[in-house]
Structure formats: structure tokens, C-alpha cells
Length: 88
Length: 109
Image (cartoon, rainbow over all chains, first blue to last red; front, top):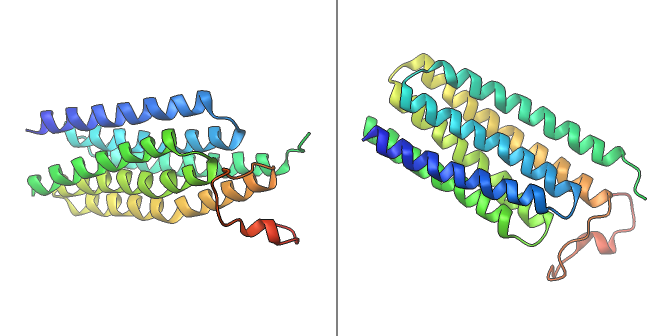
């Protein structure tokens, strides 16, 4: 049962990541791309959680929390960059 | 206990997929922020909660709840900062937006 459910969850998150990559490539503004990168970080946290669920390696939960921290900091840094950039 | 975890895992995956669908389909960056900053962290947090239920260990479960709390606390902060940066850098809302509060206010954003 766990294999089937984690396969479905992996497929859903893979499709979600693909849709976000499409938005990053197409995104009309820089803010759309920053938003897409933030969402990819959060989807990666979900994929790490599903991997921990499937394999039973609970060490990956700590890695997920670390990735969440790095993603938040990177989003804040990108937003500050967007604020400080001079508009043409 | 494992059945609760399986159901939570599926719910979290569906929430994440819905967040990505909103990012793909919504018209401008402000509506996309709604999808990305609510449904995305909730989906990832529910997946972490499922891992906590499946582990059956208090040490792991507390870490999972800590990850959920961290996601829920930091996601509005980054979303608000990003919306403010987009507004100040001149990204205009979609033409169908009916109420634009910043149109009337003349002070700094």
C-alpha cells in the first residue's frame, strides 16, 4: 500500500513541479520567477517528506526543515534585490 | 496509525498540486501569490505531519510539527515581502482587478 500511495504522491508533486517550471520560463516579470523558485523549494520539501515516508529514513525530516530555512532566506534575499533594483 | 498517515500524505500532495495549478493558471503575480503562499506550505506541512504519524516516535513527530510551524510562520512573511517588492517595482495588477487600494493612496507604499 505504501508503495502505491507514495507513487501517486510522487507523480502529483512531479506534475506540480513541472507546472511551476513552465511558469518560471514563461513568467512575464521577475516577481513571477521568484515566486516560482519559492514554490519549487516548498515542493522539494514535500518530495523529501514523501521519500522519508517511503524509505523510513527519518533523518530526511531534518533535511526538509533545513531546506525550508534556506528557501525562506533565499526568497527574502530575492525580494530585497527586487526592491533595491532601479527600474529603467 | 499508518492509515491516518496515508490519508494525510494524499491530502498534502493534492494541496501541493493545486498550488502549482494556481501558479500556472492565475492571471497576475498577486493572485499567484495567493495560491503559492497558502496551499503550497499547507501541502508540504501536511506531508511532514504524515511522516510524523507514520514514524510512531515522539522525537520525529516533534520535528515534523516544528517544520510545519516554521513553514506556516515564514510563508506569509515572504509572500508579503514579495508582493511589496513587486508593487514597488511597478508590476501592475490584472485589468480585471476591481478594487485597487494603492491607486488612491499617494503616500509611499
